[in-house]
Image (cartoon, helix red, strand yellow):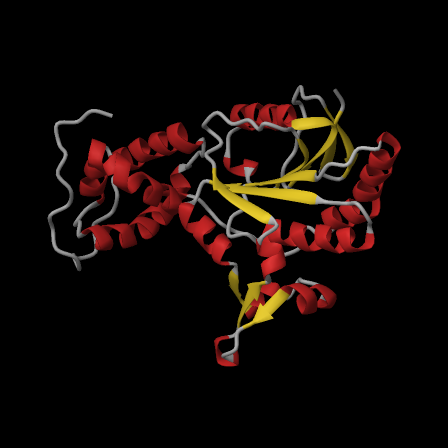
Length: 295
């Protein structure tokens, strides 16, 4: 990105609260967000964007949204501020054992079927799982609990989990694996006792994911708008409540790419507010919001 301006912000920190963002500036930023990450920002999101950007303006010592955008679109700003901006505009809503029927299907149907097929074919390889749009790590750590529990009951079973997100801030929290105690209320008691560590200072009311689960998940940053592929196809992809932020053409394109990343008979799990209706994809529905690749 070329620009004649390369200087960073010069105003001191602690500037007054900026005035409202103009519709023209919001439209410019909305187009930029769509180009960078594929997310549509309707006009109703302008107040939200203003509120989320105020912290960045204070950190950078800027007095207005226009100044921030002028800096963001410089070469230096693009290099130094883009990831912070993406963190601002992305949403990281998540919880442990969200949409529990997915994990019921995983343990009652998918895993036993996969194991039986592996025995029949005498195939000794790990089950490969991708948590796409993993946010702060609750989904991949839920998967790790379920798969580790199954592994302990199933000789010869092994697995690997890749977890990706566009937000660097979310990934940092996921790697730390420390959560407020109230965030683990959905975790079954037997898993809490085996896989969660409570803070020695009980007044802090924090828990941390145990080391055997932390070591089972590999976190990487990934923007769905960038090309992506894997050296080995996935057996399972969880991409839930992420695609709703994209428009229909982008959704279909992403689901097509996810299909290409799956092995034949691999499974895709999506959110209950999402749908593949009307999309020409090599996927068949096998349970509510669970699909199997057919070819």
